[in-house]
Structures are given as structure tokens and as C-alpha cells.
Length: 118
Image (tube, rainbow, N blue to C red; front, top):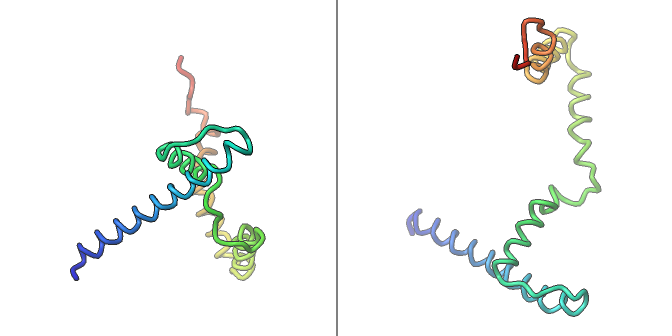
């Protein structure tokens, strides 16, 4: 089987999974929500819109259920890395970070830089 056919099959499979997920969500919504909360029934396109909105607002849960520890792991890795650097490496690192992320300081501290329109 050539690569193009495999890609087409994966696209069709993915679309079928998305459609199935939409149908299941629509069925569950229309079965439960109008009876429990008095909400209107949804069409399939409204269901896809609701799922997209939920994805935008809440995401799919990140990298797993480790109790939010992954949010702080990068900080601990950076602190460990920073502590093992030589003083010269630390200064180079600080200068590079300042150059990359603190460019706004140059604009605000430059007296020739005029942001007014008059």
C-alpha cells in the first residue's frame, strides 16, 4: 500500500472518529440536558461548535494527571541548571535572556524615542 493511500485512510479514520464523538455527545446532550436542566436540544453542527468551544476554554487536560506538578518541574530544572553553571556562563545566560525578553526597556529608557503623535 502506498503512502498516499495510508494518509487518506488515516484522514478518513480521523474524520469518522470526530463524527462518532460528535454523535455520541449530541445524543447524550439531547437525552439528558433538556430533561434535567430544561436546555434546548442541539443539532450536530451546534454540538461540534460546543465541543470546539469547550476545547478552546478548557483544553483536553494537558500532559496527564500528576496533580499539577508538571507546572513546576521546569522551574526546578532551570534552577538546578543555573546552580551548576559557572559564573561566566550565568552572566552570558542573563545577558542573552535580557536581550531576548527585555527589549522594551530600551524603548522606554531611550529619550530620543517619542511615542506621541504630535
